[in-house]
Image (cartoon, rainbow, N blue to C red; front, side, top):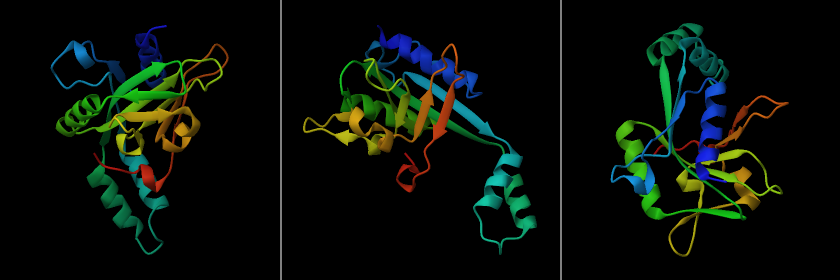
Length: 182
């Protein structure tokens, strides 16, 4: 089974979840350009920002201040560049060079880098785990490792692809460790 299949699976799941996404036609070693495998993004509207501000500020902040801040911040777009890996085995590896290209692209584009992990053995989870490079394990060879044993703790987003009986779903993992900039 090709990695392209799992990239399409992730793109289709994100798109179904109203997170527009596309596969780069020439990513990785097929080009000298710093392109991720997948580019995805979502826009947050003014009402959502106001709700988030109200939920995450102290009671001493006035509703007027929240309303003004929400108007100034919206709309906000969150973009992600994803280097996607899929294979059998218990650990997926991403070469340092690929991560450096991903970081460079995301810095220029204004997005956040993610390493995507999809384990293909039946005994492993079927989700796509999106991990900030800083949360991946650095190997002795200076590559980035994504071990299945603790991938849930490393992931900042977990995307469940749709099945014949279930719709796709996404979980945004809420952890201070995962709220990073590039």
